[in-house]
Image 1 (cartoon, rainbow, N blue to C red):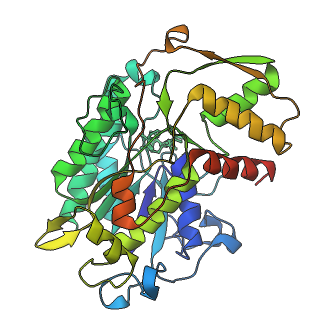
Image 2: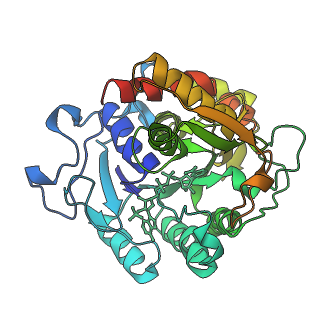
Length: 371
Ligand SMILES: NC(=O)c1ccc[n+]([C@@H]2O[C@H](COP(=O)([O-])OP(=O)(O)OC[C@H]3O[C@@H](n4cnc5c(N)ncnc54)[C@H](OP(=O)(O)O)[C@@H]3O)[C@@H](O)[C@H]2O)c1
């Protein structure tokens, strides 16, 4: 079982390498080179050739015995953060993408790469569409042809934000930005390819590293006495690590045929509306994956500073003033309300998602520990 992780330097990609390594999956070197220097994680984080642990004590896969699994990280540059070499995959280069897939021959592709610059996308719609939309058609076609599966991430920005209750997977999409339209195109392209897939829609992603709202707030808060933050956009801040850990668990359950499994996957899947492929029930489909609860960007900022001060990460918190979206114009329109209902994920995979504030405690704690 070879698992390719694209976008391995991104927030979610980086955490995926960590989450999958913690599940004792060996990390594969780029191409065929087996050199020690090619391992993206330090020795103590590398797993041995154990199958993913399963609910109920079974090994993954039919018959309870699967071959060892190997993680193949890929980035656009062919280098992981820190300089370690890995596979080079540029989603905008379809020919190169197909050749890389032929060479790597993954059984599972986790696509954590994306064009995520929401405002810049308004000026580069073709590039956003190519990377977030059309590339998923290429990836899906390869997966369908080669019996591989795809895990792909999408966004709350496929919705327009006019709902008065949390969005379910079956609700009508209506993106209001180039980025949102390009991500919806990617969802559609993957579904249309006929490849087996999980599409995980997430939102307001942040982490202790990378470019995100939490790190921007901490940087600006250190420079200024007061900040003005939008208070009329409502969502669910979701740590990249949570997304990665849930993905790792979902993959483990997805690998177990529901009709034969004795563990949680089967039990939980019974409660969920299941699709079937070739007469067999399957967990394939689209799921919402965000932390529980909801807040505004302003509420998130205040929570960040309160926790950062309490844990000694900062000495002094700035005053956070609430402003409206109209007071902070951006190139891209963002949904006013984009809280996602995660009932389907919980029912299908038996995964309870923590409240966004508890999840934030974890990331601030990670920063405070200097990890
Ligand atoms: N960030 C959010 O708030 C958010 C919200 C909802 C959904 N999502 C979705 O969640 C997923 C993961 O997002 P994230 O927050 O981890 O994003 P991220 O931190 O911006 O990482 C995206 C990664 O994709 C890579 N990438 C960009 N263009 C590429 C290309 N042409 N070929 C190959 N790699 C490319 C980037 O590499 P470089 O470093 O080389 O640019 C980067 O490492 C994405 O599907 C995103 O749409 C994110």
